[in-house]
Image 1 (cartoon, one colour):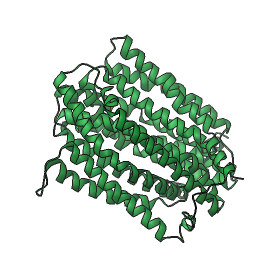
Image 2 (cartoon, one colour):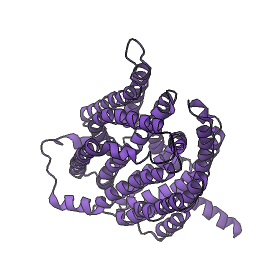
Image 3 (tube, helix red, strand yellow):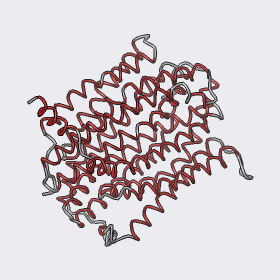
Length: 467
């Protein structure tokens, strides 16, 4: 009897070889693409970091702000993406075509609003992160470098928004390799132009932070060109592109349905990204050195986080398609195994992060104080990576069945009501050092973990939204 229970539990939590081949077939290309992107960001960061602390801090602040835009775009396409995955599971080409058009309208509105905001209030937004202790000269220099970097990066927003529409649609229809290849090409271009434009090689002027921004912008145009060309030149694999631009019409009932389901995701990503920006602002209240140390820790953290991020996106794709096909029990079983797999993978990731903690900060031309603090922040981040992996798969599980209001409360609302409040109160009203504040914020996610496990176990997310 005991042996039977063990076998049953093993069957429930772990899949066979074919299962893991299927999951990794979806997840690995996403990991590679995201890994390449984050590796470029890492090299970008190191190249700027070797120029000086003020340059690194100015660029880090702007990238923190641009992350809000990036995640708003992600939220904007994700709402329609739930429908894309389920329509694809039904072989409904017209439905997929409508969702792509919806994405295009959504990212256009978000991008235009973002450009207007940064053009009118960019300096004030950067200044929010330069409130802590530090020399006036260093703070002024960081502000100037941040403004230089932002002025160029705005040019890269339109190609970025188009590439996100096409990449997300390709992934939701099972085509994860093409966005990965485009990402690789973009990386090569970015690295080459980083080297040339930051340091002034091959007769080019040494442009510093402006050079880093131009390299990123050029790589984004290359990426979008590859993805759009491949998608439209392979209509047999992507039948929804036939007639895609004959009209930008979307049936109003579907628009309303996507808005009702997807708007919580857009609001959630806006809340989550702005909440993360607010957390960084609270941490920066402990001084200018914290800005530099957090930048170093977040850069290496983002590189390692690609594993649980890709697993979360894979849950949305695989489970979403099963729900769209009406295979509810298979969806539940697959989801449980993917959650377990993600957590186990990320225990290994955490060990790798801890081992890299003493080495990575040495690559930066900054103070010993900033390096030491960065090392501690990397270790603290690593300890909570398995918990973050669990949270990410729980979030995408709730999302896959269209339970976006629950996902919204689970993610963005919790971040602002709990995590941000903890950071704000501890940074403003206590003398607690930055490490204590950082760990307290991470530990507060335990509440969300318990809440998410209960919701997923109850099956509140098992739902077909395109029938």
